[in-house]
Image (cartoon, rainbow, N blue to C red; front, side, top):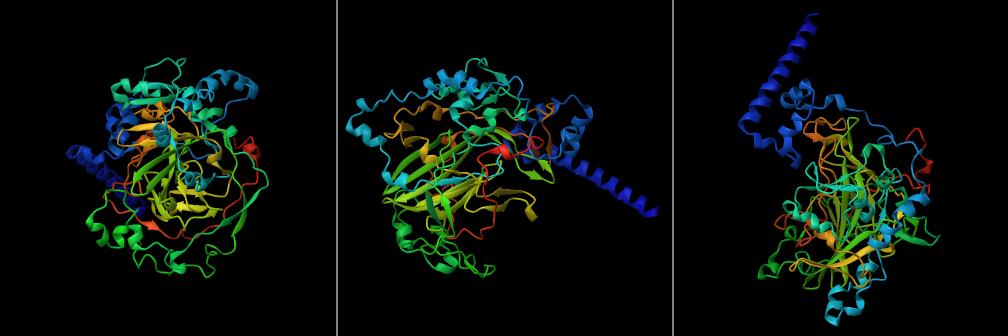
Length: 527
């Protein structure tokens, strides 16, 4: 009895202390609690809840929308009944005119380009020769999306206020007109459907890469600098020529290895490396892989010539929904619209390094390090979040003990080269040009300054909650033009930050292979 009383007293006093400290800290320095863009709207967001208890618990305890918490299900949301839904043929007929208007390949403008204009639009052949392949997750629920189809199912809103009718669909050729509303910075392309009803356009099942012909390619393991030694021709003198695309300076010759992105000797220590190392680059293939399949959802290739022999090829991948990760069986970080990217940096026509985006960060690798099929790098896209990694397996981040992690495996192999909008981009003049490969690709969408998804939902919305500063639904992302395209180094962070380029990809974990041609193998109960 005494122990129980003491425990209750300690719990109560701890709770009171937490409330006092939390409220005092917020009163003294409210800006310290601005962790995310959504936090700027906190006052109005909390006021949206009709529950007095919920509003008070959110302000004083940080427990927001507790009545909305839900445990994670095998399949997210609740797919609507097939009754009343259009058939595939009806859907195709409904969108036929729209698709013809969006992508009319007969409207080629190549006949009016002079030689100088054509040269500005040409993409070097080596960019395609080293185009990355993407392993999607075999457990994926939200597959690649078509940016044009995405626009057909959204309504532009200035914060939460519609600025167009639902029947007036924005298109890739006029999306930039939305910048007329406060510069487009507060415009959100808001879904016309409840995302938790899992509308087909958002799931993107029809965009699962096709099962390719049985053409086999060898998939090679990575170069491991801890064992294989330095990469040939990757000397500090050579790396200084492409590591930083800024103007050459007299100090380039005096850069230290750390300043050129090399790992320190401590990082290269072989402690913990398993006895049976991966096959070395140029040795026996670690497995045999089919060539990639075509997706109905086009990727976006954007190529920038940065001078001094440096060419950056950005591959952007779009998904209509990002399924957030799970912590302690509660999901956080959902959002409509999701842009991911890979950067391949070339110097004098040779691939030197790659950057894989993952959440707000990512990793850079030497070309030799990453897995390849033939000459083409292989990327692994995480289930739900679509973050990009160099290996299959479990990838923990931010929280300790793997509480927060992504998962990748050898699911459907996507070859974005088979269906892509391809462009060249001049940052100095801020000009995007459709390349000579896809001359009819629209360009206006690129200039849109707003978000490719919903504004985060109010606390009064039954889908929304917040715990420990993390929201169940967050703002949709900005588009490719906001991904630091003019970066001088391969990494996405600020140019004055170090950019470590790894010459190994770490342990490869056994992961489930894709064995089906689509999600049909998932039971109706899981859906």
